[in-house]
Image: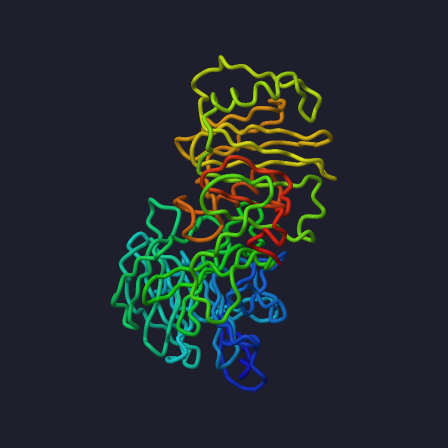
Length: 479
């Protein structure tokens, strides 16, 4: 690459001069598969790392030390230079520090909105949001000059990407009334809008998290990187591929550790993952979605958490009690407490039933149970089973689910979530989807899930997940 030597004149000035040529880091195709490569912030401990991502996640061998409080970065492929955007500042990132470029007072960057590099015009594109809209600027490093392209006219735009060869600028739109990006807006290099494309699936996005939503263009596609963790934002949670022509959205990775990835690049255009066979003890109807988190990521937890999410249950509670009364009257649960079966219960909890059978495990089990409608979760511990806590989550306006069969002191109301019964895009009726739901569950419980299982209309689950009699793996996602 052509290295830029830096000479300061004043507290916030920068003179950029091209001097030395050295090998350039990976920029576009960055691995043996020919996968698209793009440069983004990888949130890690300390200063955020910066480097190359592919649709599967960060390429850790390319990561280098970033700078503090940088909202967005971009990369000049011809020189290998990283530029970063802080509040009111654009600068060059080198050796973990950001050195500001000289900026006229007329350039207002107080609300960073995105950063991209136009390789065709050798300039940095910078977006800044305000109450009057989103203003787009360019900075040309070779001449150290600034130019205001114009106001894009909206203040709800997120991220910034550029296809310099086509003279096209892309931003995502997140309406103020929604918790997801719903549209792609396309501008030419003069700032005039040329297209507005509806996304096939909204991309969940919580605007108060860091790092912000990042957007990049590579090999004719857009890639959005979103952080969903509320309490642990050091993890890159999801990467989405977007076809800029059609708005088709595919989630290509879920979290930076690659423990949950959808498909392997190249050639994958997205779409639902085929339903895997149901595990033994799982009974119900609809699309079955599941995964097991690699043991190395959860082995240090004191409790193993199992997440179960459903749209609804199958059996009416009264009918369920009638069916089991003769079998269970006088029996005892895993804590040695006699199970009381009463038929004259309040009609208010006459909801469909989902049974959860809990087997004996080495560690205590924490259950996170989410439903899109009101259900009765009937917990049935086996002898020796240890249940630490049970968190129940309901959808907005459907938060009256009940948990029976265990000591009520074990049950914690986790609040409302948009319960998603599938991690695969397009397979759940939840408005914002799985990503936000699982982030909320992790925040409330303080745990990472050992397993996730989702089903539209469910009758029963067994915890932990077991292989079916047919044999073979029953997990849709593995490391």
